[in-house]
Length: 355
Image 1 (tube, helix red, strand yellow):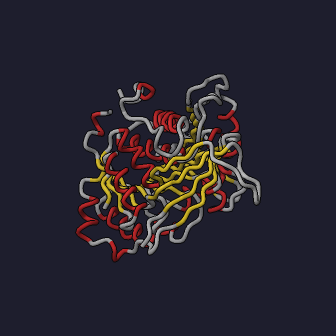
Image 2 (spheres, rainbow, N blue to C red):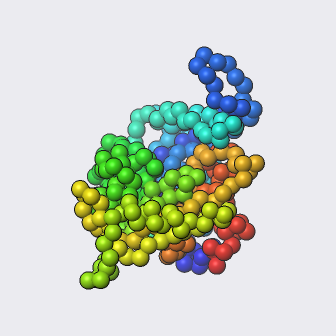
Image 3 (tube, rainbow, N blue to C red):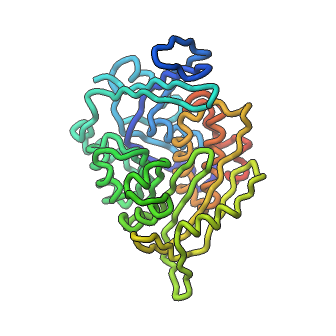
């Protein structure tokens, strides 16, 4: 673990739940009866997973969420506490069907009820949760409570990382306050209505003036990151953003099995019909996990985000951060569920990053 991260507090606000993981030979057809090849009950929820990852990497996470005093709720608390995560109706739970053939997963989520509201979070508890925090993370859920937490974080100059899986109620209000954004593959174009992902990333930085970087995760195809730059000079080259991405893609080392990162120089990135932003474009590759080792992708995005939280706290360079996050996500994919395969900071596979 980086010494810079010792006793570093990270706060998350969002979903914690229980996952019921059914592993099947192939996804069932309508009206078909099949049997599981194995079954596992494990903690889930984007915030629960991302902060469990952060805890194993060496951070000290606190979660603002809500569970009920029922079987699922008690299991959520037990597992988070076992991983060193502090947690400040019915509890949420998710059925996860893992297809052994395609290595894909299908999630059927049942939200908790009643949902968490700002009245459920006393000001004293909020201040305690944020005390000493280096960064705050939101997964887009519990939007009314999350907005209260976000405004308090801004007052205290605590940076915000926003996870955007899909369009959600209240999402824009928190995005306007965010310093960093990590998106699922479909989100940038859905939010901006841009014709390509690179154009959408330019649009996001133009609309959200506070954002330092935005990352879009692409599963086995790695990720793309656009970092805002304030070093624009008179000689800074201007280039169409799609063309720049294409040129970076050609530099990928297709034979490498470990995560790599290709980056542009500081460039005026132009998106036709949208505008121009000065920044650097990064292309991160995913680890090439052998088919015999690839077990389950559930929670891979959460592992990536937990790693980004750590990397920000440890002041990693963007190149190091993207390779680190890809390595942690790949480790997670080698075991069933969102948490079983999450590595600890002592894992030999992370040794080069933790120096």
